[in-house]
Image (cartoon, rainbow, N blue to C red; front, side, top):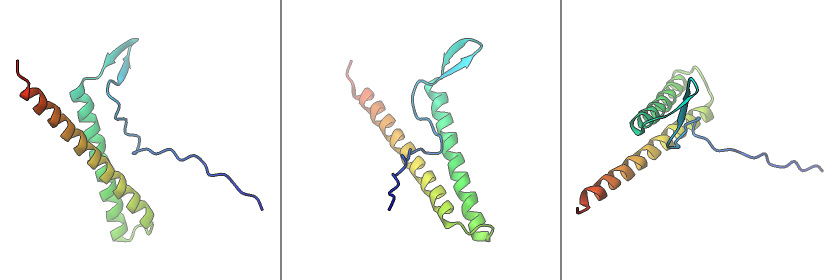
Length: 104
């Protein structure tokens, strides 16, 4: 009896890159993306995941697909991305409030 090994599963949230300080190559120059641009791009990606989840759910409800697994996976990806974004927002607000409490 042969026993096959389990393949390594790499977790990802639909290719969203949440690392700060992304660099963009522009004609042999490295330009550091500003935090506001980074945040806007991350929010756009979360919105895109939410739209994809809604579209898959609508297709399932209309009977265009019968793959409930795909519907649930898309919904969970969108939910996790939204929860992660909310936690980032909470940390940013906590940092802002801490800075505002500092005495000079």
